[in-house]
Amino acid sequence: MHWLGRSNDKREDVKLVFENVKSIIVLATSYNLGIHHLPNIKEGKISRYAWGRDYHKVLDKKTRKLRLRLKDLGIDAKFYTDTGPCMDKQWAVEAGLGWQGKNGLVLNKKLGSYFFISVGFLDTEIEEDKPYQDFCGACTKCISACPTGAIIQDKVVDANKCISYWTIESTTDKFPKEISDNLNNWAFGCDICQEVCPWNNHKNKLSQEFNFLPKENETTFEYEKIKNMTEEEFNIRYLSTPMKRTKLSGIKRNMEEIRGKV
Ligand code: SF4
Ligand code: SF4
Image (tube, rainbow, N blue to C red; front, side, top):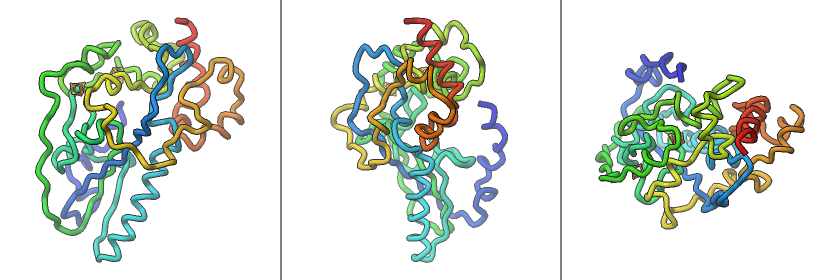
């Protein structure tokens, strides 16, 4: 994911992002709706985070409201939700929101890992929270379950081996054999290393955000539907979702990759 390197200076010096920064706050918004993929799905599975409306838009609206509330209190702020350079995972740990699991994601005991992280830069000093303790312990379930061996070290995922990277970001016509052979019917993203995590369980606090509910109750792609879909139909259905990033051509490619293995 080469673009990460472009803004390293801003990651290291937050004053380049927000000149008057005195504090950083980190927020979690759950997208866990208590809905699961059915077992033995033959169609293309969509990662949970992408079932509903694009989280950038949903959380931008929420943080804009928060910014106005803070302004009323005389606090100037700037927020990012995956929209600018920041060390969101490291800061989430330092801010006491969760710990970084061996799968690289931030986990919270009550929320599990199905949540989005927003970061706020404030021009006011606030009391510091303590960093969150690591609760992975001796567990290695995510590492063992990853079908492509993408978790190469504790907290380190090799994007070149990760199904999420290939099905969302890559623009290639054909996947490498080791990815293609191990897709496990994932057509957009991959949740395997989250599904097996014991901290994602029935006790998790569920999301109240209706915008993250599966649009048209769809949590998978149907092969025939995608194969025959036009650009216009794709735009009407998916333009407000994270799927727009991969475009119809990418989703068609992913479904062909899965179909080739059925
Ligand atoms: S998202 Fe899938 S492929 Fe990537 S590390 Fe997790 S289990 Fe492995
Ligand atoms: S599956 Fe186990 S090792 Fe992996 S993130 Fe969850 S608790 Fe940590």
